[in-house]
Amino acid sequence: MVVRFELSALKRTKWYEIFLRILFGGVATVATGMVAKSFGPILGGLFLAFPAIFPATASLVEKHEREKKQRAGINGTMRSRNAVALEARGAAMGSIGLAVFAIVVWKFLSGEPQWVVLAAAGLAWLVTSMLIWQLRRAIRSNRSKLKHAGQTREA
Image 1 (spheres, rainbow, N blue to C red):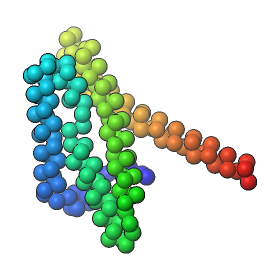
Image 2: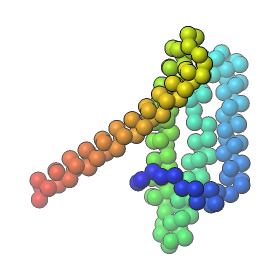
Image 3: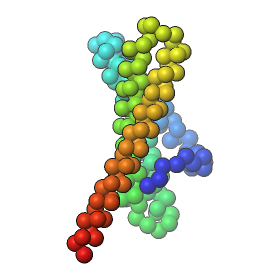
C-alpha cells in the first residue's frame, strides 16, 4: 500500500465526519486536562501522546475504504481492515516521534529561546517519524526478499 495525500478525499468527507473527529479530539483533550488536574502534569502529559482523533479517523477510513470497494462490486472488508492497520501503524510511529519532540522540549526549553526549541523539536519529530517509516519499509522489503528467496530454493 502506498501512502499518499489526496485532496479529492476532502470532497468525499461529509460534515458529520469532520464533526466526529473534532468531537473525539475535544473529548480526549478534556479528559487529558482532567487527568492532569487530578493527578499532576506528568501523568497528564502521558495522555497527550494519545492521538486524539485516531478513533474517529480509524472508523472513517474503514467506512470509506469499504464503501469504495462496494461501489466497485467487491467485498472491501479485508481492504478496509488493512487500511485501518496502516493508519494505526502511522499513528504509533508518529507517537514515537512525539516522544522525541517531548524529550527535546524537556531537555532544552529552560536554557534556549522557546521558538528555537519548538522548531528543533518539530524537526526532530518529523525526522524521527520519517526514519521510522523508512525503517519499516526496509524491514518489510527484506522480509519479502527473504520469503521469495526461500520459495525459489524450494522449487
